[in-house]
Image (tube, rainbow, N blue to C red; front, side, top):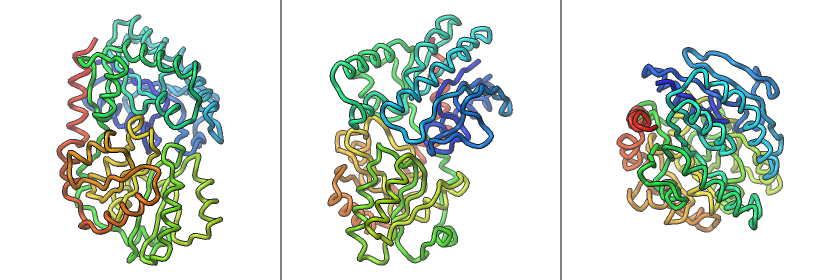
Length: 406
């Protein structure tokens, strides 16, 4: 098949949506499909375009046998709700011509990765003009996140946004998303259940199996390898509410054997660093985003993984970091309500992780204590990942599903 992947995030971004879209395109190309990608220059999670790419220029280049079109966009240094909307809209506008230029190529499938739904009209138009099957893959419910996290006010704007989202979701031949809770939300938004696909984020489970703790890596971060490490690794933004981690560290600062390690980048990092400085905490350490090849050792070196989200985000977004935490057999503390995707996972897979109330420092501290009492290797987590999150198995099912759409 000729497959067009269309989305704002793509490799060489190594976290979140960009990582998975990049791996998706590579896997599909390796199966013999002709793949093209329309995307933006890499900027996430630092909100700064990487060296070697331009924020203002179009670029077309080949990555092996994949043709990649990069379109300019506005990247705010300090993203706010309004600036994020302009950011998303700028990519939609700049990429429209690149998308419609694919009419001559005549793709068999057009796969739009959300965010952003701003790009849906041109994706659907291309599919209609070429007779291609249209697939919307939802990594984040951006409208739910926008209003659920208080990043935008309600009223008429909220009604319009949800009505537009509902119309867009129903217009695609297939809608896939990454968790059972997010599939349920799609049904509530009016998507025909027959058109829904479960397409979870995956893990390269073999890379994470049997990995040992790395004292050398911990020493590189300035930590005593004998300390018990409480790790948050990933994007540092508004959805996470990581201030609660800093408050938990303040309460546990009289425990010299515990060290909080926050690894990653994002719009909220400077604020957290300043908060730690003001509180005078010496048990919180920061490190930059690590190369993907170091990720197994990083995750295996933690005694407790912090999967932190604000209330209202747990079904709008599903933290991609969790797949690899499970694969390495890590003990995770997850902040989510019981009726969310993460909550249901913890209920259905007893022992897979410790579920605690979101936005409660008391609950977080109690959850950390429970996680630290668990065996070093969580066999429930690693077994679940091997059976349900293996990359080849997940991608094979997705390939079969989109082959029949249109």
